[in-house]
Amino acid sequence: MQVDITKTSLDEIRDFRTMFLHENHFQFVCNKCHDYGWADTWLFRTGNVRIGYGAVWGTDRRQDRDTIFEFYLLPPFRKYASTVFEAFQQACKAIWIEAQSNDVMLSTMLHRFCEHSFAEAILFEDQFQTAFEIPGAIFRKRSEHDPMDGDDSDYVIDMDGEIVASGGLMLNYNIPYADIYMQTKEQYRERGFATYIVQELKRTAYKMGRVPAARCNIGNRISQATLEKAGFRVCGFRLKGAIRVVED
Image 1 (cartoon, helix red, strand yellow):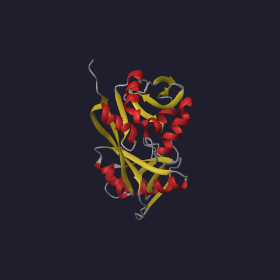
Image 2 (spheres, helix red, strand yellow):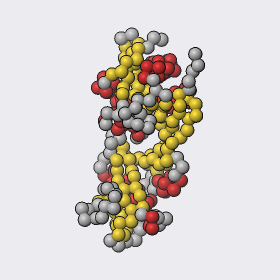
Image 3 (cartoon, rainbow, N blue to C red):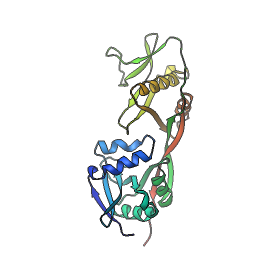
Image 4 (cartoon, one colour):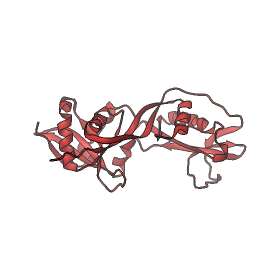
C-alpha cells in the first residue's frame, strides 16, 4: 500500500485523537503534550483517504522530536500497520518509541521495531473503595495559613495541628481521568498516612466527576504497595524502546 506521511496541525487530526481516546478507556499519560505544544502531529493518507495519524515529542528535552508516542490507524487499515509505521518513522526521523502497554497498537510496534525496550513506570486504575481511618487524622484542603515548606499540594492530612502528608490531583490528562500524587513527611512514614490520603484523594476525584488514576516508577515498591492498599490495581506499564537501525 502506498502511504503519504505529512506533518500537520493538531486540529487536522483531532477527530482521529477523539477516536483513539474513545477506543482506549484509560488515562493517557502523554495527553498533555498536545495541550502544551510539546508535540508534532503527522497525518497518514493513502490516495485521498485519511487513514490515521501519529505524534512525536522529545524523550529527554521537550524541544526535541525524537520519540513516537502516539500511532493510530482506522480499523480497515490496521493490517498495514507495520508498513505505515515504517513510513512514519522514516518521515519523522524518530529514534525512540514510548508506549503504554495498554495501548495495544503502539506497544505492538514497540515490540516489533525496537531493541533494548524496558518499562519505566507502572500504571494504575481504581479497583475498589476502602474505608481506612486514623484516629485524629483530618483530610482537608490546604489553607493559606499552612506552611508551604516547598510543597504546593492542594490537600493535606492534619494530625493534631501538624501537616503529616500532602497530595493532590493532576487534571491535565484526558477527561475524565485525574492523576493522584502524594507524599508523607519522613518522620511520619509507615503509619498509614500515605494510604489514607490516597483513599481520600480518590473520593475527592469522584466528587469532581473525575476517575482517579495513578502511576509510579517501576522500582518504587513502597508507592506501588500504597496504591494497591488504597484500592488501585496495575493496569499497564510505560514502555520505552530504541528503534532498531536497519542496515542498508
